[in-house]
Length: 265
Ligand code: PEP
Ligand code: MN
Image 1: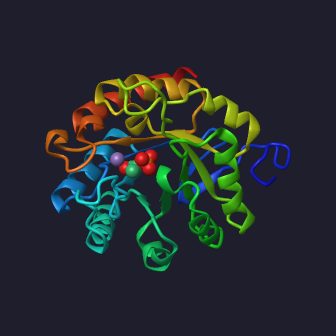
Image 2: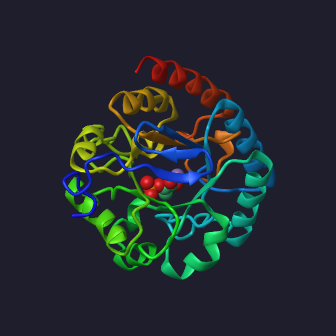
């Protein structure tokens, strides 16, 4: 299969923007809020995480919320705010796509299209993204095995888009103390099975901001090609995922530890 190491021996390098790529020794740190909430929030976060050393900005404009009566994202307005944050900070944008119908109008607004955990096996979305000429960040389904996850990547690649970045974000287990069980086994295992870059989301993987720095460093030590970390200027007021979001200062501190770790690896 196209995602397998047998088919392609060398690590794939996915290009994100001029001078920014992931895989083959290139580590991509993505940071930003769970959801775009307003201009000040996203621009302030973008400028701060850029200063700390992040290479891309995340922010959801379309949110796949479990409860339909909670905030669903700012939609088109959120995409426009991401574009402004990109212009001011220079950071490329990562944002979630939920349906094939949104591809055409979302493409100019994003550098990486994120497929969320809940959509990992949305096969019509995966097939449509196979026809797109932009990187896709494919999160592991919260109940997906490693083989199911790799087959989801195969759906995108079979359509001709080889720019797939895999993201481990935790799976459901009997453990209730954490939001999910971050499966760091998956990092070296998937890297042995596949040539695709593998990054880790320690925010959804733990659900607790105090665990995020340790699990970020552990992920990189395990060989992850990058991280996607939720960062909010005021996590207590975040409309979604505040409990697992680092504030700007905590992220800056984490970046300092990351740089130290990478320098000795
Ligand atoms: C997110 O990145 O905010 C998100 C909804 O993640 P996941 O799909 O991993 O739950
Ligand atoms: Mn989130």
